[in-house]
Length: 221
Image 1 (tube, rainbow, N blue to C red):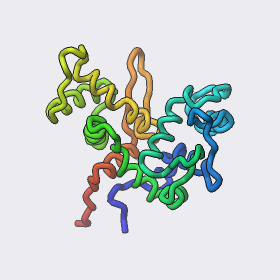
Image 2: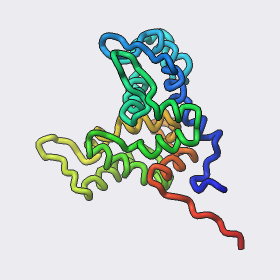
Image 3: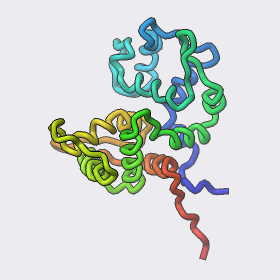
Image 4: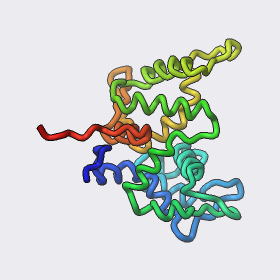
């Protein structure tokens, strides 16, 4: 049976590299966190060398690698990791999915919008809608349409804040944008004084899966 999302498993595995790395690193023994609740320096150094995120090797504190902390927090929020008595552990779901890339990829897509803040959830769903279409090429374009879209949904920026709709959208979506970037949804490139944020083929498929939008099957003539 063909996959209506139209993305092969090898492409999914490439997108899952940081997620599978941290889940495998936690493994069956777990990771003892610091007293402040962060990953220990040795694990942070491993992450900075194993994950191609452009961070210097000498960085050894999780607070200095924001994407790592955000990824760990997200995996905990969506039920793949948990903390017990100061130790980071896999949940039952995490153990089940870690070596099942297709199922893990789909689960991450289905839960990517998850947030304790309703505005973040709404902004993420709107962002995914535009990602699925692959029609925008820069972060500023996304923020412009997100600002208008959130306003249409009833999210109003108070005049006292001094923020524009785009600024408010940026504040809401920034952590999810970074997470999606680390998952390979966006491929950034600099051109002169500007920067494009092109949606990858895998990124568009991820957005469709998150929105549960299937590509119609091609029926032979």
